[in-house]
Image (cartoon, rainbow, N blue to C red; front, side, top):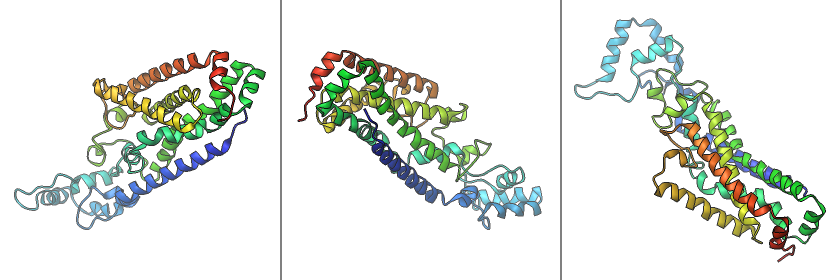
Length: 316
């Protein structure tokens, strides 16, 4: 069972394009790194972080007085959606970044216009390249000869190795997104994160060391679940399109069941916002989905003779 690298390479190129356009959207939205750093200092005369050097020439009293005038330029009309001159000067003098933190930019990128629908098209993005070569093998007359000539257990291991590598598609996508995130900001949470960061997606990542790594591990498990579902159906299908459709049906039924039964948020496959459960509970539940799908797939494939009978070995 010779591996075909072309589908994997094409899929990685698609992933790189997705990550790049998501990065461009977020970068343009925030206005670029220079604008990000002072976006929340909405003060006349401040157009870059270096402009805050005026703080060095002002006394604390002058800064405080200017801040009061900025916050309430007219009686009864106060502005609370930006940092005051006092806060901006404090950040400047203490070398505290004013840009949104890494997690905020990362969150913005994975929720861009291109990547927000990822839970919808991810099955096709993974299953088409993962099962393309396997589907050709299962449809060929060569399949029965190949399986009978080789040790069946060895065949299954090679089969899983050839398709499971596509579970890395989502982690590779998120990994590229994270690296691109570092070109816009390079710091974690600080005392101004409440203003410059995002309220959602907050508790779980600010309180969890190595959150993005755990987030990517959870994404890998999601990819494995999707592949297991595909393997369950490709065994009895001659057309790859039918496998994709049936996999989508099971995938969306699972999402609807979780939603309909109002299960805890840790049972949701996709972690897209702040949760009460935390990333560890998400990984545990996704691992349960993986084990269930793997057991079902293993039961279907363990009987060599029945598998050969279902495959048939002939081209339609």
